[in-house]
Image (cartoon, rainbow over all chains, first blue to last red; front, side, top):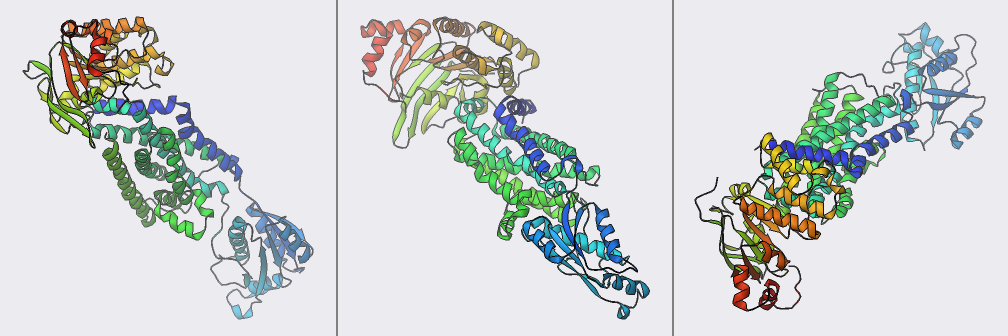
Length: 384
Length: 251
């Protein structure tokens, strides 16, 4: 295998990517524009956090402890909740139904009494006055139903000076026990964005191979002493290189939009590495597309057979899909890439954690297999 | 390095069938070293199939073919190092400049930097592409693209050159420049196999011609001798006489 040939062909492919406007757009500009548009739409510009509008109906008018005021102050301090005060539950419910607020919290009249009793005997539950905060949620808002209850749960738990896992007299109806934190919406979609950019390599590989077939260049390469192994190695080198550049650009864009997860350089290194491995499957899918396509224009259309499932089932879009579609997502490599990146960036998992390593193993095995299938199919029907 | 062989090309009983249709039917042909040979024939006669087999990119159904003594099927890699092919279509990378196209193919032949630089300079000046060497090939005229395509076939200074209709779509000036270049190849001891539909071109520059039809060589010899023997005015008349007036379609 001659390095001179591999380098020459890889350079050629990189020049094509830079010099052909349509390729340049699809490979580099489109992901950047998409990330910017998506990130900006989800309130990510400048690192802003999303705020939720919550209505408050305060029935607690105690003059002693005034626990309801403490709760309100706690919620305001989160900077995630924008509170709107109502004197009656009916008015609040009307605004909830109109979408003016995404949730309504009703603080009961015995709320301060409950806090006083708790503070008097924190270790004796038989002396507590149990009290329940009612929470009404806008069922039409997926984000609100998932994000607001944990935030309020955490605020109420802090009233007792303890975390929410410890027994306390304060109950919230509908709340779950997931720890809430002030996370910008962009953070939820950023891991998928890394995965997303590389998927369009499928189209580029398919177009490149079919174009070279159409204009006789593939034949010309075959007539030269270049071996099939050298040729395929050059393609893998150039396209994985392009995938790395894409990942760097997407990272730069998400960083500019405010995505700054508290992780170290090794985690970023791992993220780039898994995207690089993932790009192998996209080269493979591109070769499969080139095999079944008679022309470059057909390749563009047919590439969506592989682009769309990877995109919808395996990247950030997948979070809003049905449970069935999310199960289907487990059959596309992009799902595991996004999952690994989410574990690393959002869940704080270590690179060596079992979840991340399992994802890496699945991505590696499936991507190498897809690449091998792509090469075998292309070589069988078109020769290299 | 070539084997000790008198013939640059030696074809014996070469057969190629596509399903039930025979593109080549026991073709036999020898082309000597340093010879400029014209392979003539109507559309679909088997010219391109012959060249594809000789280049090692198509397997024959039967028979053997050797380039400078190397079997095209079993010693393909060596054959590919010895040959240069200018295909029928204008095959260049449009997004690369003329120089970059030549550098790429020089590197595929593992040429040294110095040799590649010298060869590029020679080819660009001979084929009149010097002034546009750094422009992307997409901006070249049709004739310039054809000349660049020809240069790509010759970048590694091959021993045997196959030129599949090299002067198609060229103006008379470009055509004469290419003819001069082809003759120069012969002068430098290279073997050239040329396919063309321009009979005056074959008559003008070829040492010998072979007329192929339905996958068989139906005539071969020195153009003037063939013309005299058949009592026709020129090669075109001989061609029509041997292959008929029926319009052929590409295979």
